Length: 305
Image (cartoon, rainbow, N blue to C red; front, side, top):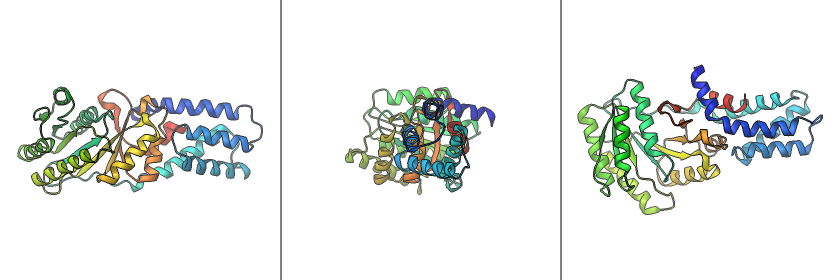
């Protein structure tokens, strides 16, 4: 557990460092907390992309505790932040991954261009393989140049077969063939990569729905999970993406990528609070094992401890 916590600490280092610099500047020479103190604190929290509503709530809680003489130091502020964020993430409310007891569990991975879908699919394959499960990959990104080849290279690296078609081919047909193959081979997990698409392009979103229908034809009830990859470094735009995708497609979980390169780690909390989507995994580095199942307590500790 300690080693995983260190991965969270490292991945959230930029967010934590930026927050700490601002808190130290606010409280280092402050003998009594004033209205200006609270305004600066709120701005510091918003800078992590926690969102205005959450930041305001947190500052209000801190103000109340300070005025009642319950807190007095920067460490106290961090402790309140950790407690509040953990409460907002509500780990006890997150449903388990929907596993198919009678065949492969089919997971469709979607997202906008550049959000890290293909790399994330490979890291997910590594994760499930490390758990001892047999994994099949589907190269459903038939549009991007070298998209199929990239997943095939990843497949060789993690030891997973890849079902692929031709560049420019029908992505729904690839998904159908891959689902059929997963059933025939007795695979436990099928991970389907998809082409990146902007949530504002309705035609592309309709095509994604077609892919979902093709999977259901091959295996009724599939896909069992639809996970949206969101680039954390885009900050509040990540929230917009998640909101719009959710209006057009049923999302069952989020994967927050590139947290290690962002000072905007608070967006995890903002998305969970506004949309209620469970965060399944977070990308905390470049290595295969740096994609970690999301742990709300470790996240809150790494950000505020």
